[in-house]
Length: 103
Length: 122
Image (cartoon, rainbow over all chains, first blue to last red; front, top):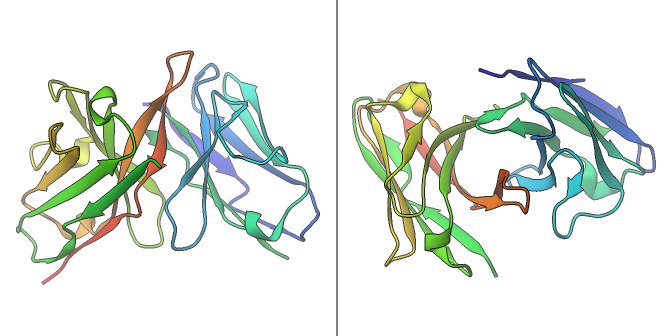
């Protein structure tokens, strides 16, 4: 089974700063990786699929990159609504999540 | 608008049973794989089960095999999860999620319902 690890566990940043989140797979998953955003009390929302494609309606400040075992979700300039937990996913496996909170 | 609405959660004693439902609207339900994903309080996401378009293929996470059964009724645009022999560790918010298929054939969870809470406790 492929295990996904995410780092850091928590990222404390200010609005306007750039966020860089990492997801590492225990073996190659090619480009078969997605990122989800979950705000408190809400269901997860698909942000990025196939490692680098933004889902419908996702702002351009979100971008995904990587292939094989190392992936990155970047948020170019944090908006107040971006403070949330972010999960990476490959098939039936989710990473433990990275919480982006306000510094 | 694509919408998924779960129901059926509640408080149940260990060893008890519960049936969750997910009502789908805004898309052609019988064209999509469907999933249940759960989230224990304060924890991460765990995929539970999925089912193909006509209900002939079903898959489960090891932790629920033999206890949970996923099913669907395409005439009613509904997805179900029958949960038997419930344990404290099954306590979670259960989400229904559609499998979104991309042009390249990959499948992702989109959208998700709002979830229904299952609490297993005496």
